[in-house]
Image 1 (tube, rainbow, N blue to C red):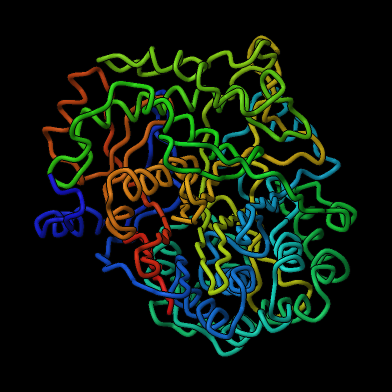
Image 2: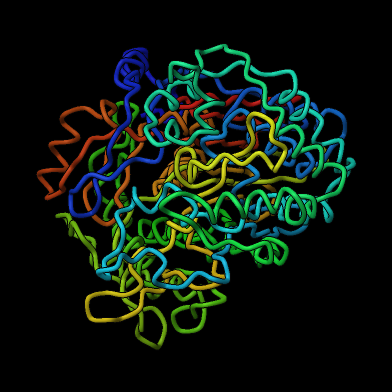
Length: 603
């Protein structure tokens, strides 16, 4: 079998037909109940992949990719381009990320990998009862999301400034010019933004957002409508001129706090002191060996992505190999069985142990205990010929867990950016406002002008329930100043022997981010596909429940083969947003997810 061959014409046509549905979709939770997927589907567009020699940038929007490309072309560094891209995404892809949210930045400076943590934090006035109703039961997720209660202290602006101070080449203010120009002159509403406005129910109920994103009849602005955002232009100009303090102190901060605390029926608890005291953190990146060939680097907790990704890769490595991982250009049933069984084990551990390390101790005192070879070899022995359906957490290290496992609950949006600059520096950055359209609060920075930026609903990434039925606390419960657990999985992969950067990857997609990133890493490195072929492959996952397959992408024989092994298979829309850049013999090759609007630019 030639794993490098392109997807067949039949498959491409099937993909387009299967994924053309644009309605909001549902994804099952571990018990088979439906839960909203991160973002609705908006079609599938076959993309060619892009070659570059000196530098490359992959983002989820053509305007963002072009702006970042121009920065790189002007001699800017990877972080310079990332700052520009984030500001443009705030404008053109507001449903997924922006300055009202947070980000994880994994940075390679040519010598070492650094992890810059710009995750949001819970306000000082928050407590573990934040999402409990008067009867002591957790709020419904949809009830918790919309409004000020779910808004965490944003971290994106501060973490970008911190990383730029260490690795930037171009002046901070210059990096804001493309977004300010687009905001003032306007940009054409994209098909995806139009579609997501069309299926959205809560945003039209918020007066400021409704007046900005919809016409007088309540219809979303049509594709191509020139949308100007003078409020955001004014906010970005202030940050460009005065640095992040312009966002975290003064009129912009006061406006944010007022909107959060006065939201009708569901106010939040952020204060001006919370904003003024927010600090990003420089954490030690986690780098782990895979198959004695590659060094895979990712983010430590509060991110759960790298730990789960590496557990899955190693559990599969320590199991009996599958002779034919691909069959007719899609993952085969035997390989999917092995992968999803490994995923169940990894997600069981994730829900048991992972939370903000400033509040929760790792099992046995080290997060690396979760990746210990002896532990994972023992866990791999539980993978048999039939599906376990639901796995139990293991016991890594010398001590047993004192926390209860977190019940499954929805996790949402994000956007991913992959960049390699001409100096050899690289960034894998995942950025988010959490749910599609965040908390649905549009803040204008106190300008009184139309538009603005959306505030996150990141606090719903905490467990809404603080404890289980027996009163055992959940590690990822709400606590003052705490960062919620994240599924974001920015990843950089290196050749273990020579240390050369081989791959930058990541995705959007809530808890499924971990699987989308795993697919890109496995397909690019282990199966030898190019970056575009890797991200175009059908999606698959398990969150320690049903086996999830991308709707319309797998033959009926694969589905039946999995069911014969005891899998509860559910076919759903799985709208990933992967952006991957891989090294080639003569430079770089980039892939952008065909399920979204992204492109790769480079020279």
